[in-house]
Length: 343
Ligand SMILES: [Zn+2]
Image (tube, rainbow, N blue to C red; front, side, top):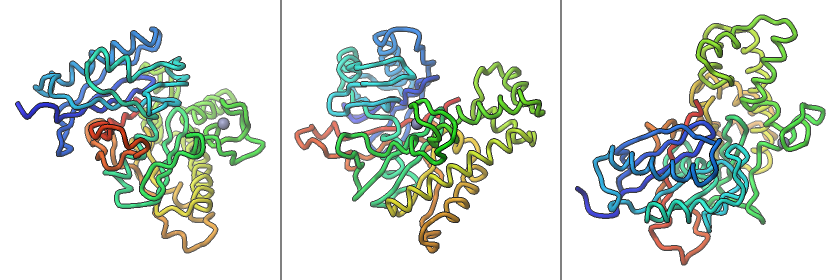
């Protein structure tokens, strides 16, 4: 048994699954556990599931709960990190849930919550593809599209904490309706949800595609990243076209972001980038480079995220957490990210 209170737990709360991992102070992963996200239950039920998952992963690491320093959660939605309150998480059906306080009470360990994309971007900055950069932008593509900005080495929050909502940048004014009520947001053009909509529309219009068959075979109701990968491997023409269009618009987004913020680099993450890697990112990068205002800005690298999957997730070093509140005890400044592929 190691010394007390030196391990941390990182949890990624996805709409489909909860992933937790244990890390030691050397950022080594000691154990990883996963559980389904049962969103049908009330928030208290899901918080109990999280507590059980923490117990499981601590046990899997051969440790005791008394050795935990803190638990850090990336939650999908608007989160007040000061108080660990999840204000708006439509995927979970949550509004104003004091996640940190409730889970902390069950576990008797400090629990910190932050928006999942912010945590992901901080992670890439600290230990991933954006290591060493002072200015970077992260864009995560999944069910929706989220982003985060690191400026002067810190997470940039904006005046109200709502900065970097890149998913709702409008890149096609007469484009499809977005969940936010506007038209032509990048999320309505390039998210996995948008791609699924376009694939289904093409099939309805009579185009041949194996996507629905693949979904049925794999018993998937949604076009997950693994379905996309399988369809592309089969050279499915509908999937290829839809993917190409999504990559084009994402490239336009990257160009807009770079033209506006002049970052040192851009990191593209999320389930699709994780699955498809360079196949996915290369065309995005090409379109971005073609649309950079200053042509030599092709020197702004567009990387794919590195902290893929719980297997390779790492602790975000305490020094990189936003120092918003200096009274915050030292142990509060750790952030851990178990980056989930949303399969
Ligand atoms: Zn929108």
